[in-house]
Length: 292
Image (tube, rainbow, N blue to C red; front, top):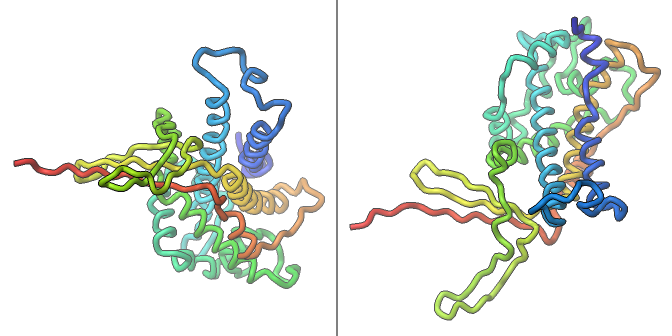
């Protein structure tokens, strides 16, 4: 039988970090950079395919890390001002999907995270939900100065992470049938009368996914990979998962001699989301018209 102690002790809280670090090493390491060093020769699988596969996995891993983080977040929500860590394992197995609630956070901003300041009953203490979520088990008098600013930074991080996962179409294009494809090598603007190119962009490092629209139209979304950013944001999401799980493991399982107490800042959170200078995205939308 899986007990709550077993759950917190065995939970794979470093999964996304370990995967992101492994993928980055494969992309950057000269010793393991060639496809033939990893795989037996496969017809139709070239070096570009290998590197693209690693970047897709980095991107998909980012989305999965955010998805996991918000699932933990919603499964630990209080009921009638009371919180229940023992019920987390049960809540995680209810097959609930929280994408609409994630979209609400992305759309409404940090006001949709006002629950952070909600006072909940935690044993004999009354503490704010944000503290309960990310700094579980610490007595109020044990915190060094800076807790309030860190909780504000964590709220800001959740908003930015929700924005990243707001449109699940790209995530689904990787999860379901690998529908995202490297469709374009270049994107350019040209004068309509002379077709003279006035601006062009390198799109070799991009993937394109398709979306069907409600008016029978459709759109193609092309995004250039920004792998260093994907790596940073994944580590941020993984760190927040760590905070949720590790402090509970320390208090409930009690198998750890000590764990570090980390505070966050808005500035460092925002640095994780900074985009590279050579990255861009564009959308082509096609709407059917009636012919007479």
